[in-house]
Length: 58
Image (tube, rainbow, N blue to C red):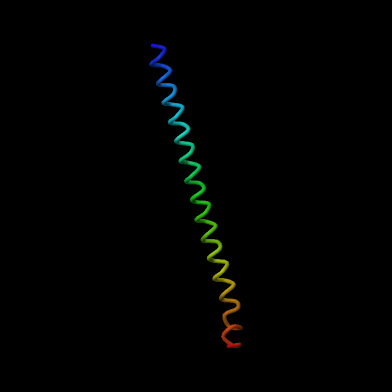
């Protein structure tokens, strides 16, 4: 019974580690996607501000 209990405990611990790892990766992916969207919006705003000046010069 002790060996079976140890194996079950090991599987549960590995499952928790896997779950936490997946959650961290999902959070990193979402954070990266949010940063990408924010950067795209900032670049679009900057481009719209300087677009007229660039068109007048060339």
